Amino acid sequence: MSRLLVDGGTPLEGEIRISGAKNSALPILAACLLTDEPMHLVNVPHLLDVTTTVELLRRMGVEVTVHDTMDLEIGAGSIRSFFAPYELVKTMRASILVLGPLVARHGEAHVSLPGGCAIGVRPVDLHLEGLRRMGAEVWVENGYIRARAGRLRGAHLFLDVVSVTATENLLMAAVLAEGESVIDNAACEPEVVDLARCLTRMGARIRGAGTDHIVVEGVPRLHGARHRILPDRIETGTYLAAALLTRGHVRLKHTRLDLLEAVVEKLREAGAEIAYGPDWIELRSVSRPRAVDVTTAPYPGFPTDMQAQFTVLNAVAEGVGTVRETIFENRFMHVHELQRMGADIRLSGRTAIVRGVPALQSAPVTATDLRASASLVLAGLGAEGTTVVDCIHHIDRGYECIEEKLTQLGARIRRVGLNYDPGVFGRAEDTDSTPSAMARG
Image 1 (tube, rainbow, N blue to C red):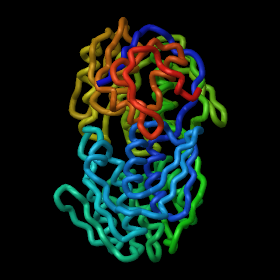
Image 2: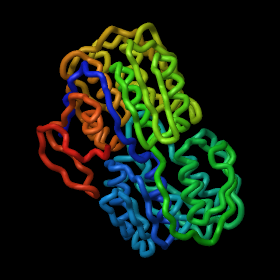
Image 3: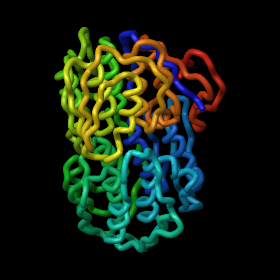
Image 4: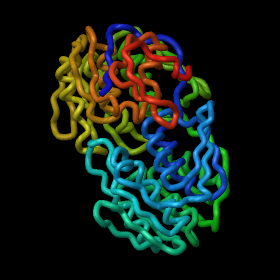
C-alpha cells in the first residue's frame, strides 16, 4: 500500500500543465463503442480510472493503441463480448456508461452494478428507466444489469434528479435510436457538453447540450472521429486552492477559467489575485485566506468535487466559513481526518461550520475517497511538520502525477511503498524516492 509524505510550510510557486478531464474522458471512451470506425482521442489523462476503462474495453474485444504522446487509437469494430464484470466495475461508478452504447449499437448488455467512492447513494434507476422508455427490456439479476432490445426508439426522458452519468448514458443511447429523443432536467456540466461535441463529430445530431433540455435526432450509424478531451476543471481548482492555502503564486497552463467560474469567484472572495488568458490561469496570494461560505450545486453552481478542498481552505482561513453539501449525503468523511490535524470543524447534518486556525498540525491521516484524498494532501501542504496520507489509491483515480506536479511547484512531497503507475501506460514498481519525471509540465 502506498502513501504520500507531505512536508508543509512551503509556498507553491511555478508553472504546471493541467491534464485532460477524467470526467470527460470516461464517457467519451464509452462512446467509442458506438461506432465500428477508428476513434482518435487526444489529451487523455494518465489515471487509474482511465486504465480500468481501457481494460474493460479490451475485455470486450476493442483494440486500444496507446501512443507516446498519450493519445489513444480505439477500434470497436470487432466487439466479442457485451459483458462488464464486477471485478472491473466495482472500483468506479463510471463503468455503467458502457450500458447505453452497448444496447444502442448491439442490442445487448450485461453490466455489473457499479462501485466507486463511498460518498453517498447514487442509484442507477434513472439509467434503467430511461432505457426502458426507449424500448429496451431491462432487469437486474445477481448483481448485474441485463438489457436487450432491437433498435431503440426515441422517447421523452425526464430525469427526476439532475444526474451527470444518467444524462450521458441516455444521450449515448439516444444518438442511435429511431426518431427524436428529449432529455429534460439534463445535467449541464462541461463534461456533458464535451461528450456531445465528440458525438457530434461522430455524426450525431444533438441540440441543447449545456442546457437542461437536450434534443437528439437519432441516426442509423456513427463514424470515427478525432476529439481532444477538455481540461480538468477539478484538477485546476485543486491546484489553485493549494496555491492560495500556501500563500503561493502559480500559473496553470492548458486550462480555461470559464470551466470553473463559481470556484474562481470563491477563490477571489477568499483573497486570491487571479489573472487569466484563453488557456491559462494564474493565482497569487500573499496573505492568510479569508473564510468563505460555499454551497454545492449542479453546474454552473459550486461543484461538489471542490467541497473538500474548500473545507481545508476554511480550516486555515481567517474567520468562520460554512460548507453546505447538497449533492451527496456522505461527503464529509475527510472532516474527521482534518480534525486529527487540529482543524476546528463542527458538523451539523450536511453542513460543516469551520473556524479557521493559524496552522494545521501534521498527523497520519487516511484518504476515504478521491476528492477527500486531495484535500488531505492540501492540508499537509499547509501544516507544520510531515503529514502521512494513507490509502492514496483513491488519488490515482483522478489526479495525474499529483506528487510530481506539486514537486514542480516547489512542494516537498514523496510517495513511498508501491508506486502505482497505471498499467496501460506503464508498470508498478517499489519506490522510496523523489518523484520521477513522468509529469508533463
